[in-house]
Image 1: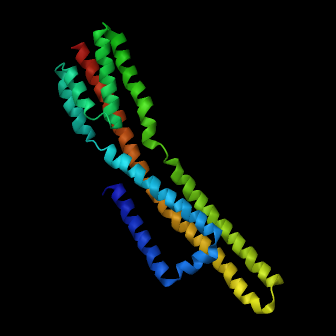
Image 2: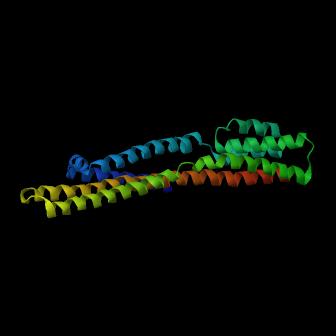
Image 3: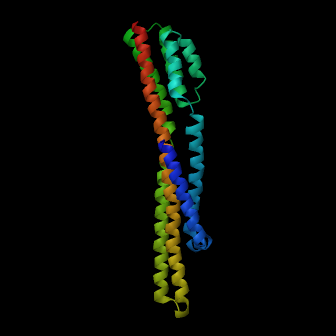
Length: 242
């Protein structure tokens, strides 16, 4: 079964569990008592959602390409010496990272042919064209994924900071507050402590799973590029030797 599918199922179950828990307690009351920390964690949640939507669009929609079929189509033209046709096909997909790398690599190879390069020099020129395009575009596939780790860690730490603040408030109430107010202040301090920890983890845990799913998709794209670019370079090399 697809790993990304399993991650999505687990995330849905997790969110359902959180929804069930929120129905059992007054989340709004805990949010109010959490104060400033709750707003900071909510800001991180909003940033995470925006980043997740952007990266999902980039990795699953913008980068959508059947890598194997794309390679096999180009392989047929390359074997027949139809480099111009292979360039035309790859140019149709140059908005994707893989398509751009193949388009740029084949253009470089074609330029090398026209300039009179032969043998090892032409092969090196071909390899350099693919490598240059890869260095230019591949980093964008994983760009900004590190922010999900930061959001998960910071939301957890903010929850912990809120916990410490709530406990300090509770102990201070026990020590200095009038007897009639101690119970209410102690309860409010504990509510702040538990509420911020809970909310921090509610944001951090889904963030980690979202990052994992997006990272898996990015790794698949990069692995496909590595595999089929090597195969294409080898196929062109073999064609030169024929």
